[in-house]
Length: 293
Ligand code: NAY
Image 1 (cartoon, helix red, strand yellow):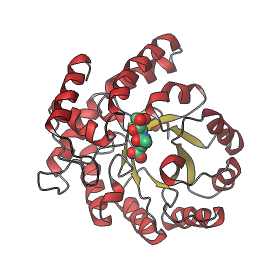
Image 2 (cartoon, helix red, strand yellow; image 1 turned 120 degrees about the horizontal axis):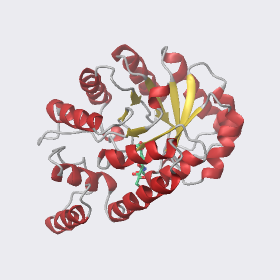
Image 3 (cartoon, helix red, strand yellow; image 1 turned 45 degrees about the vertical axis):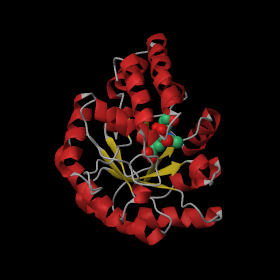
Image 4 (spheres, protein in one colour; image 1 turned 180 degrees about the vertical axis):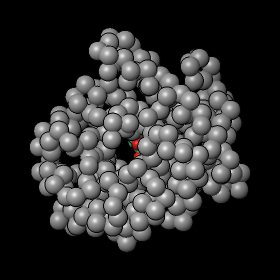
């Protein structure tokens, strides 16, 4: 898994003008990000709009990315859904497609007990011979599991780690402490990437790595060589962009920045924010202020 130790974009899903998954735009985006030094891809998560797509579309998208990446970097397919059956189906497909790992957010909307959520993960883990990265995102799912919950899952075959999307690095550390050194924890919030890495995160998976891949790859490189002051300077710099991003829906903002970078990805799916001309002009001004964008 050493290859996953770095910056992994939660990939934007490029669409054509009619809203269909775009083969050519996807290949172009993936190539571009690989050239900027990313350590893998995380598909069909929150950023990828996986919850706004059909299972078939998620499968098609994975196949396009697998074909373009040609095993040069790891590909993690997010297979999380509200229902176990579809997550299992997507897991079997990801295995056949040759993905490096799958990942699944805790099932959302219904308030399941911990035992049901554990069962959901075990069913996914048993579906195919492929590593599984659980996904902790309490703000979005409303489901907040304890360190002990993850300790039990860490003992299940195929479950290798967790994507931890919360700013609470103490809770992250508590999970790492009970799950052991082999359990790989990935930092979720990009604005505290360095904090997560400092606390022991193995790598980082996030949305703004689509628009600032080289900056974050450099942050990671500096962190690994112990040049913390320089890494922190980059974190401060990218956080100025994130501060602007947070005025918008992050997916709408990132698609607009990518467009300005010459990477057309189409419009996000409704009900995600559809930008008006004034908002696009404002984002254009932001892009001008930050030459690395
Ligand atoms: C995913 O599954 O696509 C993610 O990785 C989501 C992680 C993002 N969290 C949210 C709430 O959007 O990358 C972060 C986030 O966009 C970034 O830190 C800016 O806030």
